[in-house]
Amino acid sequence: MAASEPITSGNFTFTPTSIDGVVIVDVKSYGDARGYFMETYKAPDFATGGIDVEFVQDNQSASTQGVLRGLHFQINHPQSKLVRVVEGEVFDVAVDLRPGSPTFGQWEGVVLSAENHRQFFIPRGFAHGFYVMSETATFCYKCDDVYHPNDEGGLMWDDPAIGIEWPIVEGAEPKLSDKDQAHPAFAEWRASQGL
Image: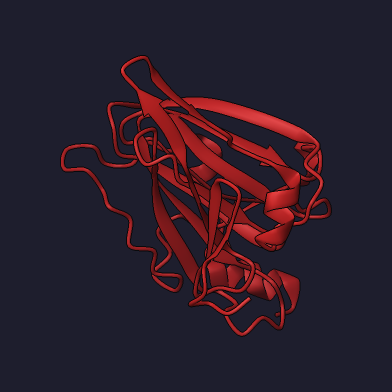
C-alpha cells in the first residue's frame, strides 16, 4: 500500500502514513436531528484497507486535560492497537521500535476526537502514547493480544532524540504517572537492546 494512496472500503477510508503499517482510518457517519450512527470496525473492510489482525481485547480510559499517557509498549507480547476517542480530543502518537525498519525511531501523530471520528491503527513493534487536549477525554482501543502486566516497557515522552511535537495546551503541562516519569531515554533503551 503506497503512502499516498488512501483505500476506501465500505464506510472506512484507510490512509497510510509516512511510517509503514501505521494507518489513519476515517469513518463515515450518518446523522440527522436525532444524532448519528457509524460503524467503528468491520473485519472485511479493514482487511481490504490493509489491517488484517484479530482483535482480542478492548480497553477504555478516561483522562483530564493535560494527562499524558506513554510512551508504552509490551516487550514480549507486542500488541497492534486500533485507537479512537469517544469523548473529547487527544493527540495520539506512535513511535517505530522495529529493528531494521527504515523509520526506526521516527514518530507519527494524529488528533483524534469525538467530533472527527478518526481512528489510528498502530501495528506491533511501536511505542504508543497520547496527550489530552480537551477538558476531559474518553479513549478506546482494540488490541490483538491480551495485556500482560509484567511485560511493560516504556520510553521518555519528551526525549529530544525522538522529537515528538506534542501540542501542549497552554496552562495544561503534561500530567504523568510516576511510572511514565521514570521511563528511559531512547538511546538508553537502544543500548539495553543492543541496537
